[in-house]
Image (cartoon, rainbow, N blue to C red; front, side):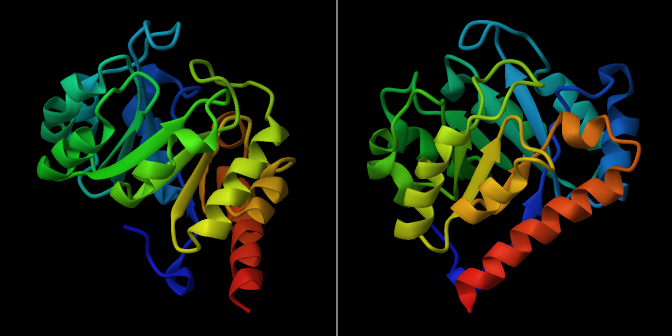
Length: 230
């Protein structure tokens, strides 16, 4: 499902995990106004990861306020198949689920597409790239976690970059997302490894100049994409 290398684009998708959730609409709109390409919405069930966040009712309310933005839900849940229809009904564009708890990945990818969403496959830090190889052709995007999923504000794991490098080398046109500890100090490693979809949480949310931070992240990634295409 990959695009051609020439059409690969940098996309910045701030995570709302560390935003003021009591002001979710205003925080989300501000991120979009300041240059975000999409919103990365973290959904946690308290089982797959030891934390709880938002579910489809909140996502649906947000969609009613923000009609046209691209919503990606990062499903950190033990039963991702259970939430496909509710999230599609809530107006989600991309449904990204972790492969670790799923026995039948390909049928789930099919179910997501039939519901009208694109497919993202996510890997925890301890999951090797070989676990996802057979499924890549069924996905629109692969998410490499650069922290343990479940909490924001963790330290970036540089040793996850070989996974990104392998994906970019073998799938030049694939959308590759990184999530966890990504900011101005770590974006170069992500960009040089080949990531083009950047989830930045605290680095953007806590900044007094969100627009400048996102522009900086974008410039670094676009520079790397340009180098690869020359």
